[in-house]
Length: 81
Image (tube, rainbow, N blue to C red; front, side):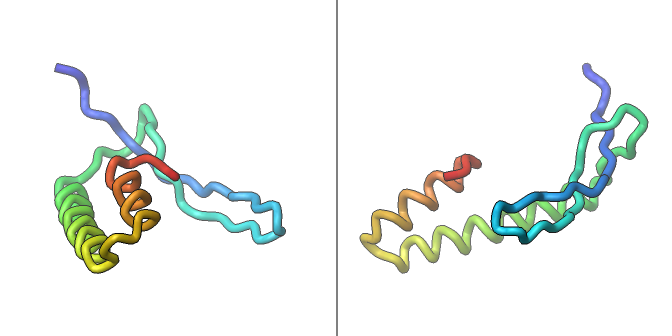
């Protein structure tokens, strides 16, 4: 079995061509970083499930809107459109 991955958090600056630059936290793999706590993992998993259900509901409410349906199916796969 492989060793569990360790992670750390650092700040990343995103540069926007329109001049609105901002910094945000970025999680990255680090050899001496911390392990992901089970409580954090469980909370994030529950949040993903909640948001997926909300997205499915919005998609059903949109009816035959092909653009929304296509973007939602792409987002559910984890792919950026």
